[in-house]
Amino acid sequence: MKFSANLGFLWNDRPLPAAIKAAKEAGFDAVECHWPYAVPASETKAALDETGLKMLGLNTVRGNVTIGENGLSALPGREEEARAAIDQAIQYATEISAGAIHVMAGNSSGPRARKAFIENLVNACDNAGSDITILIEPLNHYNAPGYFLSTVEQAADIIREVAKPNLKLMFDFYHVQIMGGDVTRRFEAALPHIGHVQIASVPDRGSPDHGELDYSFTLRRVRELGWAQPIGAEYLPANGAVPDLAWLASFKD
Ligand SMILES: O=C(O)C(=O)[C@H](O)CO
Ligand SMILES: [Mg+2]
Image 1 (cartoon, rainbow, N blue to C red):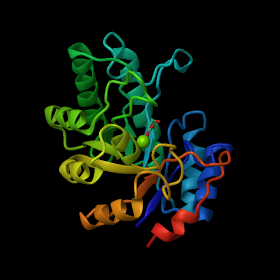
Image 2 (image 1 turned 90 degrees about the vertical axis):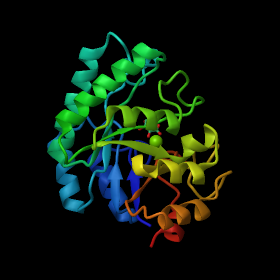
Image 3 (image 1 turned 120 degrees about the vertical axis):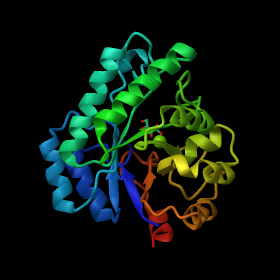
Image 4 (image 1 turned 135 degrees about the vertical axis):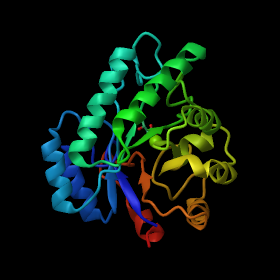
């Protein structure tokens, strides 16, 4: 299997270009991040070019994080800001040839929120072009209380309704296990919609070699089902930002 280092959590104690180099040295096949915008895209691109790693994805900004905002795209009345966040992400992703943008929904619920989310996703898919996948990710209600999107089934409904070929599901096993479990069957059912996969132990969101999910089984099944893209290692290192990587050698090809 191939793995992507999520630099939102791994090596997040250093500037993004240095984190990209650390991921390369550690043997990752790709990288992904959360919010790279403080670093000029040219600097991120230079580190990607130097290491030969691809940036698989980045997120749209969350809004006012000091008051707990967690995305803008499903917030009725905030359409202009949501569009600006999507434009910003598309521009950055284009400059660094990133593969995907996770459009963050935000904390909301109900039909007006759904309508706003769908309209923003249509706009994101149309403006991103065919080289960039737009991702939506259900988040669990402990880490992201009140977040608009919490299950893969809800996300699949939205993907069907938007009906754009470049809109896909970010299937994060950590969130999916917490929001109902039965992860192997649900992965298989969602497979046609999946654009990226992420992992972490449950419930502590640590390295994927412990906890209630057995990734040596789960990832074997993921591979048997034909998934060949790098899997995002999105976990919180036990001792700060430098990850414990014993798991990587045992899961990698
Ligand atoms: O929290 C997660 O699981 C994510 O992947 C998002 O990018 C939000 O940071
Ligand atoms: Mg995730």
